[in-house]
Image 1 (spheres, rainbow, N blue to C red):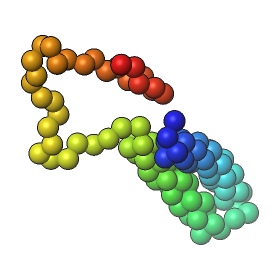
Image 2 (image 1 turned 180 degrees about the vertical axis):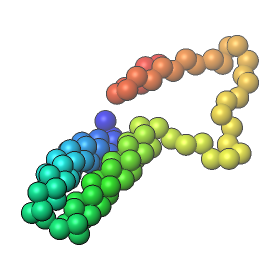
Image 3 (image 1 turned 45 degrees about the vertical axis):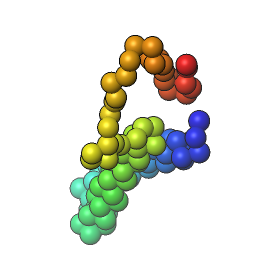
Image 4 (image 1 turned 45 degrees about the horizontal axis):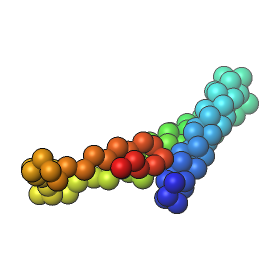
Length: 99
């Protein structure tokens, strides 16, 4: 596994954990706000932290997809037509290549 894939997976796991933590915090602040223990500003800050955690998770998901594959630039060929005697079959699983 490539280093950038490991980093992307680790970032993704951390982002998922952070979303869970921020969601639990937000729920606590909602209850505390209803009971008049925290201010609206404190509730808004908890909401903003939860929203940011979700945005970070979206970014981590996108980075994970990018780490596992490559994008093709406009104008780049996707395939070429070759004679039958030149064929090479390549299969790719998640962690290795088979020829």
